[in-house]
Image (cartoon, rainbow, N blue to C red; front, side, top):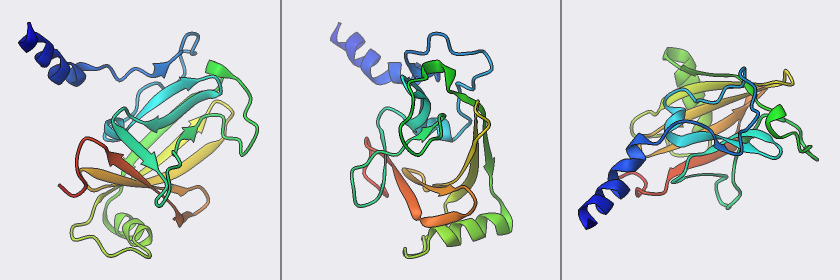
Length: 174
């Protein structure tokens, strides 16, 4: 019995569905509820009273450096006073593109502004999310293996908007 319990604790998470979390009853069929790879390794879609959000997957932490303020990407896309729209606010598009060549190099160089240059360059991605409201947000993600970073890139990418994506089950750089 204890082996069955140990097996289910260790192996069951490998079979967990990529379905969104929270109360998603009534989510329209046109809502995007699955994330593309590799962001599905780090993040998930949560159904909240304020609409769907893209946030850290269980076991991961998305936070601003130097603080413990969680980072999330809301479908409602308002600066203040979000309304309780529930599943009426959702993503209609989530597009992730691997950056290559000069575009990747320039994104990585901008991301590393004020940081030491990485020993090996991360894989760089461009993420664009579109809300049912028609609003769009842009990001860059940088995959270092056991950790990743994100950076807000609406009209332009700003290194001051960087945030960390940490796998809390592993030590960084291990």
